[in-house]
Length: 232
Image (cartoon, rainbow, N blue to C red; front, top):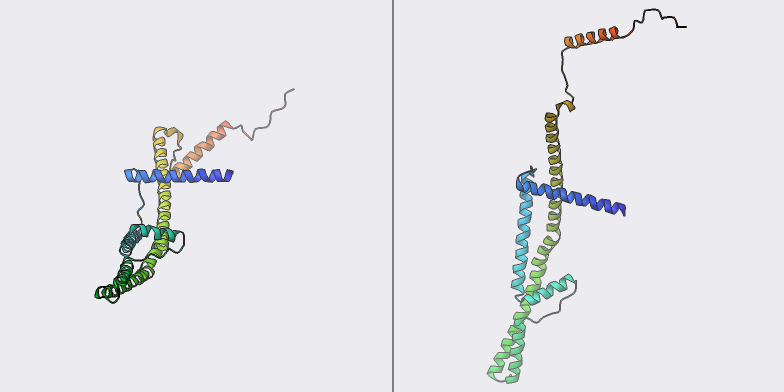
């Protein structure tokens, strides 16, 4: 439980840090590490291909199935991984209607004979259209959907991961820069609290060392003098 709470707090802090860094970059208050030009171009091309592929899929589905209700039904069955029920196409319905009318009016009459013949042709057109839809779905739409479902998502995931790492890096650089500025300001305001390094030459260092030794000899008792007798 403690581990999950700590991890949740860490994730929240990371998210807040990234959000602050992103907002400051947009406002011009923080520096942004630019990506390599070739990598940036690849990410742009991948996003462009994804958008146009989605539009191509949508427009192709509209051409193959103009009825939006049937399109939504097919999408629902696809999400449920079930086979969609077979619907009779408009050409097939028209063909069946013509054939029924021809039989009702009489196959021996000229009108009925023509209706039956036209109805059979309409049914063939409907069957050909169904084969066209199946072929386009398998050979054209399925590869495009696989690209959107797998390749495009992988590229987007890696792009988001790279952007998060960049935000973390820039946030750390921003905190370091602000800490250095704060230390410099503190050193100017309170110079006595900060040690000052003094550089000197070799001769000056020797003179200083000699003076220090002479002062120590003056303050220390003479080691050659005999010890005083103890007091009674």
